[in-house]
Length: 220
Image (cartoon, rainbow, N blue to C red):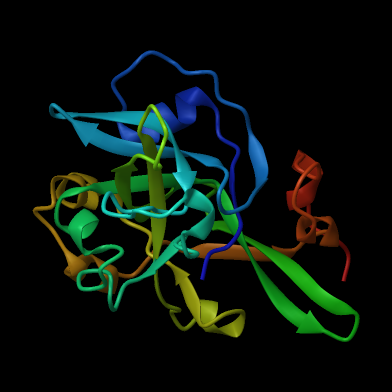
């Protein structure tokens, strides 16, 4: 799974990596993003890609209960994303890319859960395959946009740390994914070369702990 990640790029970096066509929004680097908070999402419309804020945790348009009753949908399993009711409509027609500078996974050690930070070996922005939805909570006056990150079985390198990992798209597959011309075959493509290091256990706390020191390597 991918339950915590980072979006700590500049506008120039994400604009170039995702081929965005829009004026620069006010981006705030984030180093400890948790589910149900707002994240940057790349979606396509009228032939152009745009970066927009969405809730991390997809709520399908047909959901009739309050937001607080929605299940944990911040990840969608690659094996069932095309058929599971929560995701299948979005898989058919509402694709997105979630740009990320890295993500966290944990190992179990004698003194508790130890976070590890994962990022592209060359430091580039990762493009996670995602889905998005538009939903209106009962009694609300406006729609809410939400998104999920698709996860798949870990590759040989990642299995040393976790059995799942985000589906990371190659830049040449962005158009096919966003237009829905490509599908689940992209989940089988090898992801980018990755790097990993142990980081502070402050990552384990969600809330005010969100600063650049969270991704700094710690001594082992």
